[in-house]
Structures are given as C-alpha cells and as structure tokens.
Amino acid sequence: MKYYITTAIDYTNGSPHIGHAYEKVLADIITRYRRLRGDEAFFLTGVDQHGQKVQQTAEAEGVHPATYVRRTTKKFVKAWEALQVEYDDFAETTAEAHKKCVQEILQKLFDEGKIYKKAYKGHYSIRQEQFLTDKERNEDGEFGEEWGEVVELEEENYYFRLSDYVDWLREFVSNSEDFVIPAFRKADVLNAVERAVDTDLCISRPKERLQWGIEFPFDTNFVTYVWFDALINYISFAGYNKPEGSELPDFKDLWPAQIHIIGKDILVPSHSIYWPCMLKAMGFADEEMPRLLVHGWWNIKGGKMSKSLGNVVDPVELTERVGVDAVRYYLARDIHTGRDSDFDPDRLVMLFNTELANNLGNLCNRGLNMTKRYLGGECKESSYDDDLSKELREASSKTIAVYKEAMDRFCISEALEHTIKFITLANVYAEKQKPWELAKDEANLEQVTAVLNHMVEVVAIAAVLLRPVIPHASERIIAQLQADHLNSISLEDLAWGLIPVGHTVAKPKPVFPRITLEEPEPSA
Image (cartoon, rainbow, N blue to C red; front, side, top):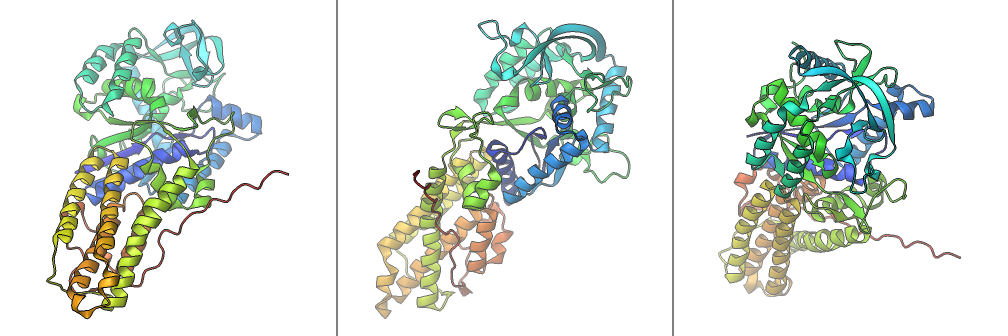
C-alpha cells in the first residue's frame, strides 16, 4: 500500500514547543512503521508563513515579513532535526508552486460561482484571523478567551459558498467510519456541522489591512485568508495541478492514500468543515476525502501550556538535556493517541531508566556479554529445550501480532506496552534460567547455549519493534548484534529465528545510559 502522511503545518508566528514536537514525532513514527510493514510512505510537514499575525509581528520587529518567516522557519527545521524527524518534503506556503496552485483553485471556484463578493459588518478575532458570528458566543453571550482580542469591522470581502456543502458534509461524516480518528471526536465534528448551516466562509482580506498573503488572481486588491491558503498545502505539495517538469510528486501516487495528523484545537472548523467542503467544491469524490488523526494536548499539572504562563517546554532544550531517545520514547509512550496527557520530566526519566536502560539495556548487555564470555560470541546450535523457552518463543509471536494490531490503530503507546512486557518476560526468563550459574559446569553447555540464544533473539526482535520509535538506538543495538539485515527487514518477515546458528555478536556497549536530572540548587 501507499501512505501519504501529513501534519498540520506550523504557523511561523512563534517557536516550536513540545506540542509541535509530539505531532511531528507521531507522524515520523507512523511513517517509519508503515515502511516497516513494507508499505510506501511519503511524509510531508512544513510551515504556514502568511497571515495578519505574521505581518504584525514582522512590523513590530522592523523587518519584512519574508525575512521574519525565514528566520522563524529555521527554528522549526532545527527542532525536527534534533528530534530525528525525517520528512520527505517540507512545505513552505511562500513557495511559488504553492501560491500558483492556490490561485488556480481560487480562479476555478470563482468561475464556477462558488466564490462571491459582499460587504459585511461584524466581529473579528485577531488571534484566529476570522469573522465571528453569534454562534461563536459562549453561554454568557461573550466571545471566549480562545478568540483573543475581538474587534468590530465593516468591509467588503470574498466568500466561499460553504453552506452549499453542509448537507453533504453532514451525511458524509455520519456515514464515514474513519474520517475522524479516534471515533469519539466524530460528535465534535457533527456539532460543528450544525453550526455551519447557512454560514459562508470569508476567504479574503483587503490589502489595505493585510498585504502579506497570496493575491487573488481575479482581484488584486485582496489576499487569501490564511486557512484557505494553508490547507491547500496538503495537495499543492503532493503535486496537485503541478506544472510540467515540476519535481513535485505525481498526485495520483499519493492521493487518496493519505492521513492528516492534527491537534484537537484545529479539528473544527478548519480541518473537518472548511477543508472537506473545499475539496468537494474542487471536485473531489467522497472516497478521496482525507482521514484526520486527531491528537490531544500535552498539559502541565492539568493545565494548558502557555507562553503567558511561562510553562512552554522547548523540545530542543529538552533533547539537549536528556537525549533524543528519551524524548521520542516518552512522547510516544506516555500519551494515548487522541487523549491529553500531563508532561512530567520526572516520569520521562523514570520511563527511560526503567523500560529502556534497566530492562532492554540490561537484557542486551547481559545476553551479549555472556555470549562473548561463554560461547566466544557465537550463537551456537543447541538441542536443549524446556517449557520456559517454549513460553518465550510463543510470547514473541503474540507480541508481534498485538504490536502490529495496535500500531495499525495508531495506538503507539499500547504497542510499546506490549513490547516492554515481552522484554520483561525475557529478563524474568534469564533470572529463572541463571546461565551465569549454569556456566560453572560444562555439562550444562547445551542449556547455557539455548538460554543465551533466546536472550539474544529477544534483543533482536525488540530492536526491530522499537525501530520506528527510537530509530538510532535501534540501529546501535543492531550494530552490536552485527545483524545488519535487521535494518531492512519487513514486519511481515519478523518471526523467531532472526539470529541464525553460527552468527557472531559483538561486545556490548551501553545503548541507554541512565539519566540523572540535576537537582536545583537550594536557595540561600
């Protein structure tokens, strides 16, 4: 199969934080997993560079918006490099090919009567860069804090006939089993659909108010509303309407085998209301609609991270402090996809030290060390077998099956939990067999050989299962096993027997050095 995996592009009026990092790491894990499954996968991420907030911030800093977004974009690129996020393309909405694609779509919809012009007076959210209606008021009749500063504006703009597609969208969402993942988010979308009845979307901003945007092809006095620009990146960078000779992918190779990974804060209205209606207006069929994988937030002490509160976690600083393996593992392990979780640095350290350093690291170190000491590093043939060994082999096939099933459902934490249980079982197996005691008597050589072979085999299987989550650590384990073939093995071929008789392993080196967080110095 082919998979086209995208994340929401990050708005360049800010800096990367742990929420951005989680989304990118999640997408990277899913991409690597699909490839482990033997599928083709293309991963797109990027930055949203237009909009009023960008223009205002650039003006405040005394620089051109283009200079500001280039500088800010580098922060995001640096962060994803630090987290070992490997994408296939990086979308920047200032790219000429993207702007051309947006303008072609605008012209087509305008020519078909799906965009019209009218004057409007109403309330406008500066933070969200959109006009508000009474439907956005809370139970007290006020616009909530999520809208930021709200002002009254009266101006002429262009509108997309969103209301023409509300009936279709209601039926599509109601009948779809996987448009929104996880399924409990479907109710949020259906509620938002009802709020969109008789509502059209303002998709322009007059140049007298905003110049930093994509110019309308049929009216150069206006630029495009940031969401009508940003959402189109999912198809423009996938090769939709690409010019001849372009280096962009072939659109038919990527679409509709796609999934958009987004935060719950942008599920409605942008991704579940605006975007499918835009696609439908462009001529996309129901079966060509994207799937939306919606993740929750990382909170701190039960509250939302906020720049104003000063509790935003910088992923680059965190990686420099505890290492990339610890950060990636924690982000994947300690949140259930779709739900919120509390960011806890102490728990990050505990999970790394307990599950990786003490558990997998210990198994790898003991298994390889004893194989070198007692067998000269060679995994030799043995006829010995017992119930404990059979139990471990049976557990391997069960673990691979439940891992695959959980990962297919995007339940990364659940897949890791099963993997860690398997590694723990192998350590219990070692404690019960006690090969270090058995090795004192040469008569036990067959049993020692069998036990060490089993320990090494579990390390090999674990290294493959963990490859999407901590790829570089997995590579280091595989290097110590001297089993390069594991770097390219498919999950379909993953089974007991990865390390053949006669194979030689290397002397182990610590792959997961324990983390110790420095205690803050006591105040005087």
